[in-house]
Image (cartoon, rainbow, N blue to C red; front, side):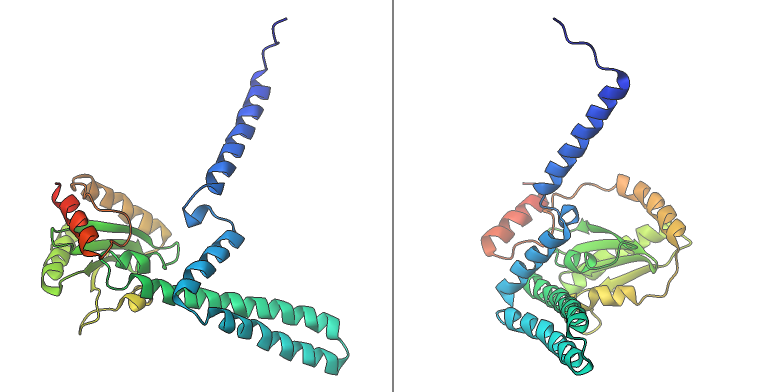
Amino acid sequence: MAKKPLSKAKQSELDAKAAIKAEKLRKKNSDDPRDWGTLRQIRQAYRITKENDPKLDLMLAGAFLVPFVIVLVIGFLLGRPIMLGISGLLLGLIAALLLLTQRTKRATYTRFRGQAGSAEVALGMLSKKWVSSPAINANRHMDVVHRTVGPGGIVLVGEGDPNRARQLLESEARKHRTVVHDAPVVTVMMGDKDGQVPLDQLAKHIKKLPKQLDTAGIGEIRQRLRALDAVRPKLPLPKGPMPTSPRAAKGSRRALRGG
């Protein structure tokens, strides 16, 4: 006996459930932190930080215990140990998480300092108000220009050899000013020399820029920049900071040259 065909409403319901199930499976197997739950993000942050910060466990324990014990002692003195003990527990967890966030950022900067493309790490620390496009231009020497668009306008970040990268940076600035006339185009050279912004200070430097654009303005600027990016040749660069070992760097440079 043939099965009765499902109604459109029933079929749509089944399709929706299947799509939700597939999305959950995708997020479960995803390597993108944006798809992870809070606990998985915390575990990953702890694992990465622990590799570069041997004292992490001791510091986290201290960050948790100090506020917890202080509030608990106050609770006993006031005759309310349970209520204030719970408050101390929550306060200790918050303090430990804040410390973990701080140490994770520091460990991340330490891990990628000196690697080509490392500015992308700092741009990833910006809030969602900023939309970044890593490695919009580069040369065969692995000097790179990144871009981020946000409340402070268009920010172009150069990294690599100061002379070569600055030339690349100014070239990109001219192109952007040609396309966008009503928003500031700010250039920043990342590095540890005079007149440069260190990797671990880059995100803070960008956040401090005077507010020039609102959400609508940012969207409009991004739309106009799509025309500039559309005529830009695709760069065969790996995503994220590039390896610095001689063999890996040689392979990356070969890929940049196209063979």
